[in-house]
Image 1 (tube, rainbow, N blue to C red):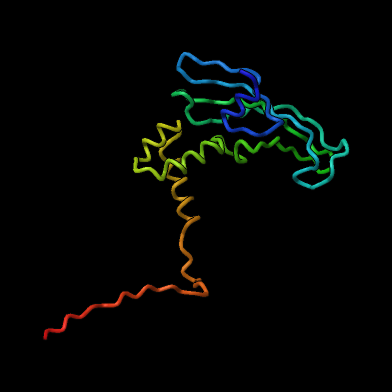
Image 2: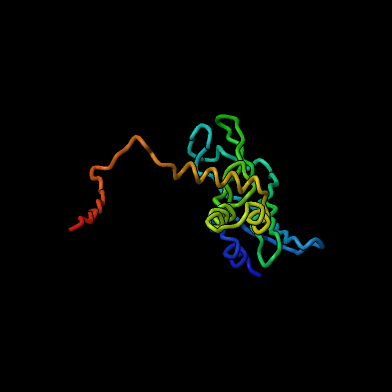
Length: 172
């Protein structure tokens, strides 16, 4: 399977992320190996524009977990480029939009979790379907609940009230 097809199936649209190989293990887990490398435009710490002040400084291995595909758990072992800024003497890691910073669960899995939370099933069932923990699903539920809380300190310009007329039976 080609690199672009695998990325499309996993919902990855980062052009710098390259999936190099993949195999199904004895435990049924699909393990993919990829790399993330690019030339940063500026330092994330000091903001200096990169004119050969930011150099590659080795690699760091990270693991990204995806939801089950065809009944198998998918894990991407990603080699990320580590960078060093000569101006401020700090290191930073290459970032991708496939996963949030400092996280191991992919954004597509997070979106699927929110979609499945609309179904009348248990958190444990959703966690089993997505190859995550039930505490992760619970945190996603609480995060979504915070985003949709009603602001009681705000009233709209127009309040619409539907008043139903009552019918009174008057005896003759």
